[in-house]
Amino acid sequence: MIDFRQGFTRYYVIALMVQIVWGLTPTASRFVIEEIPVELYITIRWSISGMIFSIYLLLTKSWRKIPLRDFGIISCLGLLGYGVASFGTLYGLKFGGVSNFALMAAMSPIITSLVSVLILNERPQKQFIFSLLIGVLGLILLLVGKYQVSTFEIAGISALLILMAYVCEALVFVYSKKFKSKVDTAQYLAIAQVSTALFMWVLQGIIYHQFSEVSDLTSRGLGSILFVSIVSCVLCYAILYWLLRFFDGHRLALFDGLHTLSAVFFGYIFFRDEIRWPMILGGGLILLAVVVGNLSRRNR
Image (cartoon, rainbow, N blue to C red; front, side):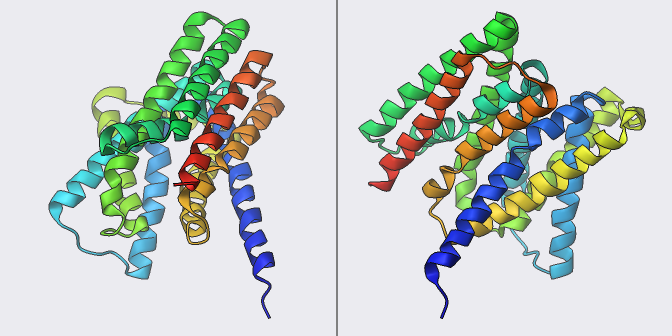
C-alpha cells in the first residue's frame, strides 16, 4: 500500500531541490557576463533552450497547429518576457552583484500579484495591501544596504533594471494565462524562446556584431551557459510545471524564498559579496511579504 504522506513528502523535497539548484543561476550568469557581453549571452542562452524544447516537440510529435494570431502573440510575449526582461535582470546582476540581485528577486511574486490586480481588475484583500507595504519597505532597506557597499547610483540603477524586468515578466504572466488551456506548455515555451533567440540573432547581425567574442568563453563560462540553458531554462521549468499537479500555484510560490536564500549563499561563496544588515533585513521583509500575500490567497 502506498503511503500518501511519504509520496507528498517526496514532492516537497523535489520542490526544495529545484529552488536550491535554481539559486545557482545568478552565479552562473555572472560567470558568463564576466567573459562575454550580456547581449551575446542572451542570444546563446535562449537559442539553446528554445532548440531543446523544439527538438522535444519534434521527437514526441506533440506540436499542435495554432492560429497565426496566437503564434504572433506568443512570440511577442516571449520577446518581452525573455528578451527585454533578460536585459533588465542581467544588467541589474552585472551592476549590483549576485546577492543584491537574489534579494531583489524576492520582489517578483509581489510585482506579479500587483500587475494581476491592476490589469485583471482582481479585488485584493487587506492582507495583500499589507504585504505590498512590507515589500516596499524591504526594497527601501535593500537600496540602503546596497548604497552602503557601493554608491547610490549603482544601487538605484540595479534596482530599477531588475524591477523593470519583473514588471515585464509579470505582464507576460498575466497575458499568457489565456493560452494555458489552448497551447501545450512545451510548445508555448518553444515558440516564445525561439522567437526571442531569432530576434537576438538579428540584433547581433545588425547592431551588436559580437559573434567573434564567443571565443572569449573559458570552460567555466561555457559550462555556466550550458547549466543555465539546460538546467535552469529547461529542466527546472519542466519540473516546476510538473509539480503544479501536486501543489496549488500559491503554495508552490512559497518555495521562492528558498531560491532567494540559495542564490544569496552562492553569491557569497563564489564572489564574497558584501552583505550589510539592511540588505538582510530588507530581503527578510520581502520574503515575509510573499508569505503574507500567499496566505491571504489561501483563505479566499
